[in-house]
Length: 392
Image (tube, helix red, strand yellow):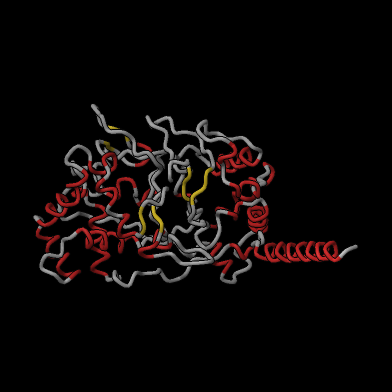
């Protein structure tokens, strides 16, 4: 064998060795499907430096949250679709905002009506203060991803978006460009709001869109359920979960659910293409993030209060959700606009088996915490109906 051939053999050997070492390193980086993927919620709520919490700001934010003065026709409040009675969600597949009446399952459009359904399921406000918190990073505060399509970051910014949205709160009363200015003018005409904003923010002209967002976000940061039985287990109480619940947790991890539902919030806060069935109440298909039919991984906390499930509320029970994933892991895509090759690559790790569903559901119930603040103001400064037009 000549020098050239010997050199080639040596180089090939080195390449194989390097490739082996590279694969070994890659294998070490793969996160195992064990309890280290999960975590307890912090006992303290993260607060942005530029928006400290004070009792006065909480109270102002709470009044604003329940006051329909923020909506075009003064008939819809934030609480209309995020009500304490429904776990700060509403139990509808997709929301009815403007020109509706009733609360939760009894809510319906008034007649006549030309307002469409809100195109997505109303996510709960509970624990939204922890949005962005994972085991790897803490993108909370102004960096926290919001909404199903992550189009806005931070609770302060998120709280202003529904005020501008046509089908949610604005309606035909004014244009999107004018919405916040008109709402701020309305608030400025109410003496109690002028006094409260000045007291909280310390300026004569304190009713601004920035302060409006800060006040509502501050109240939302008090709606917390961070002491579920799962949290207690992760903090060292080994007997707080039953044998079945622990078995369900093991299956949750083994079946690949934790590939996306991980960390303290049981969400990687990324978008994924899953091919959820279309919502027939919508005239136009919802193509989600970057028009790819991708949607942000929702938290699995407090699922007891936030049914129905998925971005469009098409799956009514947790059993339905797991059956959907069982079909998906078997190659069945339920959305006609999504091809199998478009679905998320992480689905190759999903191995949900029908026999595992009952135990996984038992585990998911350990993530419920009913201790969040459910109190409702007796009145709001506008003297409009508290919570909007929610009474039949």
